[in-house]
Amino acid sequence: MQNDLVFSVNDRPHILIVEDDLLTGEAFRCLLEEEGFKTTHVANGLAAQVALQQSCPNVLLLDLLLPDMHGRELLKQIQQQRLPVTVVVVTGEARAESAVEAMHGGAFDYLVKPVDENRLVTTVRNAVERQLLHQQLDQYRTLQSQDQFESFIGRSLPMQTVYRMIENAAVSQASVFITGESGTGKELCADAIHRLSSRRNYPMVSINCAAIPRELLESEIFGHTKGAFTGATSERKGAAAAANGGTLFFDEICDMDLELQAKLLRFIQSKHYRRVGSDKDEVTDVRFICATNRNPLIEMHEGRFREDLYYRLHVIPIEMPALRIRGTDILLLAQYLLFKYADEEGKRFEGFSLEAEQILRDYPWPGNVRELQNLLHKVVIMNDGGVIEEVMLGLHPFKIRSTTASQQNGDGASLPGGGQAIEGETIQPLWKEEKAIIERAIERCDGNVVKAAERLGISDSTIYRKRSKWATLDH
Image (cartoon, rainbow, N blue to C red; front, side):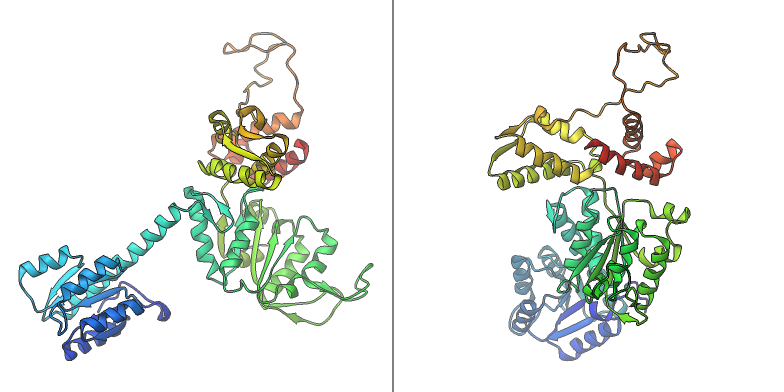
């Protein structure tokens, strides 16, 4: 018999068979067990009620003529209690009125005994597919109604996708590779995966590969022996040992030098490592999560990231969306952060004016959620309370004047196409003009950095490096 659905041993759909004829019930049970289903057989309505309360099945095969009640009563109770079970009626009652009544009562299908084996299996499989689809839709609707997931705020479609990927990744032991611009919440993503995983009772240890000097990074990861290098006055265990049983998170993994990448690859493959200065292997059991704000494929292509390490780590990829493409999440986050910081500072704010909300929506947020956090914390500190007005934000609509040197014809002269150069206009530093051009390109590419880089004739890693530099120049 053809099997369109494949079930794992621990995830077999459960079929409850309610049939008072023991031979028929046993025949149904054996047939469905052979098809990969888990089955339970009961012979009367009371036993069915008990079974439904103990463990709700995926599908209920229901005989209508039971010794202690009519099957319609059980069908009515299932509807009233809104039990998540799909009911297939299998009965000797061949009357059309009975079939119509059962279908109106919520039955998925109506089969008349004797039932062809192929018809029964096909009907049960269709009922399982319907029930699983309803479960998925219910989960999706729940996610759609969620403003908050773990430490995230947001209900936009890009974030719903991230939530689903986090849930799927959490139940696995596979390595996760998180990408996204700075400030999008990559560390929050890693933390959520760990807290939802089977390793949640063990530590998650984070290593920022960009913040630790190269000569010390190996010791931070693997530890060192006394006297291994100048300043190593005592033995020290590293993050690999500290995270045993839990999760080891490498932030900004693309900043790790190639020599250390080779040692990390060996560690991932074998679970063995050596402390700096030691010739003895040690073993630890950790789950690997890493993150970067660069494009790892470009880093690999340009020789800065090992290809074999990339494919070891890049098992489950998760891309964190930029704030500018998250739509109404910007205002949800702004409201949440405003009241959070107001509570911390002992102040009372009522929200944002319509003009302020429009500015928040229009601003491109190059620093993403981190920039929004910093802005609203400053607004709360610098103001006494009330409604946040546009001027209090200190932001302006993101407008870039598209005037190039080739268009200009001297100070105050007319430009080709009817434009006019402005005499005495303030000259911006070169990095600000460059920033304006690049951010305009990203905006016109709907936030896609890779596409903007292609249009500009540069690599997206160049854009990420420049953005990092701009963040320091802006402060």
